Structure formats: C-alpha cells, structure tokens
Length: 246
Image (cartoon, rainbow, N blue to C red):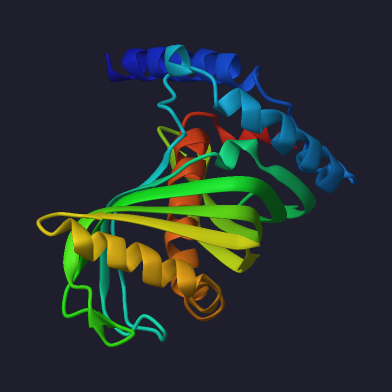
C-alpha cells in the first residue's frame, strides 16, 4: 500500500508545483542565454511574490525574517548588539541586474546585483554594556533603520537534494558580497527610559556614515540570512526540474 500513497503524494506535488510554477517565467538551465532569461524571470517574479500565494502553499515572503541575530563588536559600535524578530521590508520592489548563473544537475550558483530606493528594517533590540561616544546607551526596545538607495551584490549557493524522489534546490549559503546606501536613518524607542532611545537615535543619525562604512559587513550577514530564508521558502515548493528544466 505504501507505493499507492507515494504515487498520490508525487501527483499532488507535481500538480501543486506546476500551478505555482505557472506564476513564474521558466528558464532552461541549458539555455545559452540563461543569464538574460533569469534576469527577466527574477524581475517578473518579485512583484508576483508580493501577492497572496497562500492557495499554492507559499507563506508571505515579505517581510523577510530572521528570528534572532547577534552582531559582535566592530568599531564604531564597540558593544554586542542583539536583535530578535528582524524584519526586512520592500525587497520585492528591488530591481535586479547583471545575473550570473551556473546551474547543473547537482549544484546551484547565482549572483546578481540589486538596487532599491527604500529598504526599511525593523527589530527588537537589546544592547548590554553599550557605550557609544562616551554615553551609556544600554537598553532594549524597538529598532528601525531606513536605508535609502540601497545597492548590493548577492551570491546564492545551493545544492540539489531529493525529497520523496523529487529534486529541489536547497540554498546553503548566501553572501552579500558588497552593499551600500546613500543614507541611513535610525529610530529607537527604548523601554523604561524613553530618553535613552532618543539619545541613540540622535547619535546614530549623526554617525550614520561611519556605521555604514565600518559596520555594514556585520549587518550584511543578517540580510544574507533573510535572503536565504526567503529563497528556500520558494524553492522548497517547486521541484528543480520544473522551475529550471534541462
């Protein structure tokens, strides 16, 4: 009897995957112009992913989420920063260009450039033993950072794994190779003493450029984790050979 259930499962997976895949442009991995195809496909897919696809089993991609993350001290932020419930918004409004892909039967590699005029970040923060500009800003509360004219080069690396005999892409590593923004604007609302949040807001906005230049590598790690989670939520529902046929 097990084989009957396996057949039913595979039929269900195939039908569901085909229905969801019909929302996206399909690129053959043997296409000699696959980079051009993928650039077009990704730019077309981003607004589609911002719609309600729950009928296809896909949970909302936006906001992109990271449950918790700790950033270790890097000047000018010489204290440990702890964040929870990290949310990255508006990424589906990005424009993608210069896609470079290498897709095989066993591996997946894709690098792209991304630009976005307005990327807000939200999280719960907790700063312990935090001294900034000779002021104790130790506190916890709500964090917001607005990134204007955000640009990044991002690399996705994955492998092809079988689930119930069906091949799926599993993204194992995402690296934000480079990133920049024309302006960061911070807003902090601290618990207990609201004046601490006001001080952090003022000081960080005064020093936003140094924070961007010197500490962005650590923040890029959070972005990379958010991108990985979002990519896997999509790739886990559509078999590799449906989304990227030979």
